[in-house]
Image (cartoon, rainbow, N blue to C red; front, side, top):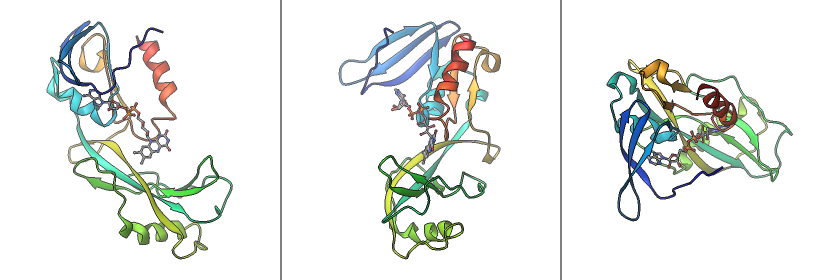
Length: 205
Ligand SMILES: Cc1cc2nc3c(=O)[nH]c(=O)nc-3n(C[C@H](O)[C@H](O)[C@H](O)COP(=O)(O)OP(=O)(O)OC[C@H]3O[C@@H](n4cnc5c(N)ncnc54)[C@H](O)[C@@H]3O)c2cc1C
C-alpha cells in the first residue's frame, strides 16, 4: 500500500499546524524533515514523550506517564492446565496469571513494579512473591519450579497523583488540531486491540 518503514530513525520535533505537520527525523545519516497532512502518534512508551515534542499542542493535552514494569517467570515441567488461568485483577493490573505459549510451555506474570525508566532485567528475588501469587490458584506448585523469564514495560497514564485511564485516544475533538491523533496509554491488551484501534482511526479519518 505504498507505506515506508524507517527503522533506526527517531522523531525529535513536530511542528503542528492543523492539516500540516512537519516532523524532524534523526537517524544514522543527516537529519531530515517529513511533511504530512495527517499524523498518528502510536509510539507506545514514547507516545507521551512525543506529545512533549509537538509545537502547537496545548500543555493540558500532555498527560503524565509512568512506567509499570511487569516480570514473567516460566514453569519448569508440565503446565497445570490446558487453558489460561486468571486470578481476580488487582489495583494496577490483571494479576499474575497463567499463559501457555505455542510450544506448550507455561509462564506466569506479569506483576507490577513502578519503575523510573524502562529496564528489562528480571530479578530472581521476586520468585517468592510469584510462588505466593501462583499458589493462590495452584496450591500444588512444586518448590523451585519457577525460573526467571522476561520483563516488559507498560505506559501508565497518571492524573492528580494517581493512576488514570488507559487507551486515551485524542483526536481533533479533544485537542482541536485537525489531522492529529495521539494514542496514549496503549498498554495491555493493546496487541489484541490493534485491529479494532486501526478500524476506529480509519472511521475517524
Ligand atoms: C508485560 C506486558 C504484558 C502484555 N500483555 C499483553 C497481552 O497479553 N495481550 C495484549 O494484547 N497486549 C499485551 N501487552 C500490551 C502490548 O504489548 C502493547 O499494548 C502493544 O505492544 C503496544 O503497541 P504499540 O504499537 O502501541 O507500541 P509499541 O509496540 O511500543 O511501538 C511503538 C514504536 O514507536 C517507536 N517510537 C517511540 N518513540 C519514537 C520516536 N520519538 N520516534 C520514532 N519512533 C518512536 C518505538 O521504538 C516502537 O517501535 C502487554 C504489555 C506488557 C508490557
